[in-house]
Length: 415
Ligand code: NIG
Ligand code: FE
Image 1 (cartoon, rainbow, N blue to C red):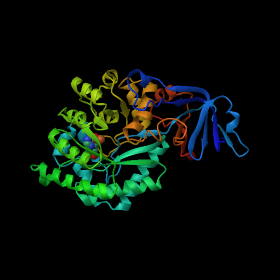
Image 2: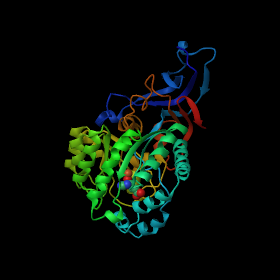
Image 3: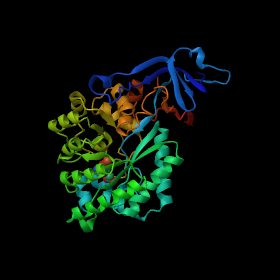
Image 4: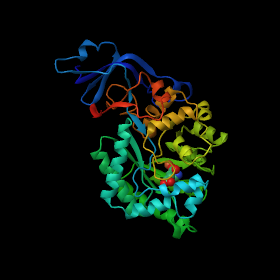
């Protein structure tokens, strides 16, 4: 079969193994690494990969050959945890953070998430669309080709719906693929602070509407001290599961209050944050096959010392991913490369583990491993090309955007 185009002479092609489930333990530190590699593309999909001169049967008169000598190709990166659609910004909280005011104190004073809720409720569809479009452009420039996007700055149906519709439209309009998560239970409106069950019921009532209008695949909840309890999280997620949603949960971000138990019981696709996860919690995730979405940028941005114990999780056999958590409060960044570097610098992951975490494992975390995450024939030709000789260099040389070119569905979208 002839290729439409063949990208040739990569110093390194990094191809994660797809073993039908997230890579764990020692597998996480392995990959097919091809020197002098090529990637053949046909109709926007991967046709073949190999080393040296492309196999003869791939090359026809019309085949475009593009030279990438000295560079490294990996599957398009996947940012599998973001709070992408929001109004306003929160640089005004920065001085408080510098003075050591805790994240939950800011929220309890009506700031934090609640201040973004106010800005988001006021923002029009077009305002949210253009802000989110800008974030997606930053992400694409850093090599990201798929993104999970949560709602959660509405706290009412009208605004939640607007957030989800913005994500849906951008999935159509932008090169990046978006996977939507409904996170109506992200905070408690101030007037219902003492009646959080009433608000939770309102969120549960939104679920059928989200389903009917096909606005999200996943449902998530912030299980945290002063936000939603483990019992409340169980109640919402069970209702979502009954309606056919896939599940995720914000657990053990500030305090370990049982979110991980809920994740294990309901076999959520992922549990997210986990900065304060206990050894027992790690064991539960491993046994239930729940993916751990780890967000070291949040620890960094909250100026805390406690990074999630990802080495322990890997050791216990948990499938791990890394993502930005991109949001205006606890992690204002769109740069997944920096997050990947924190994975190594602060949590001692190897570069191979890091790249697997943001490709094949992240693909499982958003339920897209059938179409992205590695260079299996027939998957989307989503390719991040780094101006580096290998993946090790892309982690070691930190803080700089090292992307040379990005292909989405076989088309060059960043150069
Ligand atoms: O993942 N934990 C809750 N939600 C976000 C923060 C959102 C915000 O501060 O605006 C998080 O950290
Ligand atoms: Fe988050």
